[in-house]
Length: 229
Image (cartoon, rainbow, N blue to C red):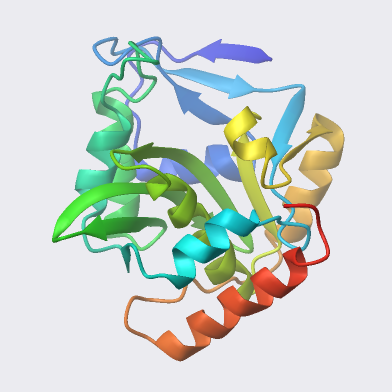
């Protein structure tokens, strides 16, 4: 993994877009550190959209409507909650410059959130950047069991529905591996990214063709039915 410090360089939404298109992304050492590092991993975590696996138990939860799913209704809140310290992660890589720039991308229509709500409360979700046919999944949070997992399944269904070809998850965790995430060499990632940037994916807006989203979910479940849950 290569790290390139940017010192006090202003992080703008436009600079972020150029960075993602070049295959790098920003991080900070911790929340209060103003310095940005550009990260260029030698291996990249990706989530195959056509090989995504939904565990059987999670299918039941999603079909049972345990959560209400919304998109882009509380983006700034999702971003802030993703940047909060947790018991298992005392430091966060999302500092104020990154948060401000990503909120700027949301205002420009490039960033999106998938949110899980329960009894009117935001209990989980994720956010990422959409560019061409690539979606760069940045971070997720959960305040209720399975909340972030449900958000991830809904994200993948929407990306498939919207014609996206690449879901970049940066680094592999056990949480992501259970869904089929895999690591690929940087060279292959850049080739896949360049192809994805030629595609114009469309992130389905909230409330638009809800039945189509349900159909996309069922297609995703059917794809997983032959895999071990």
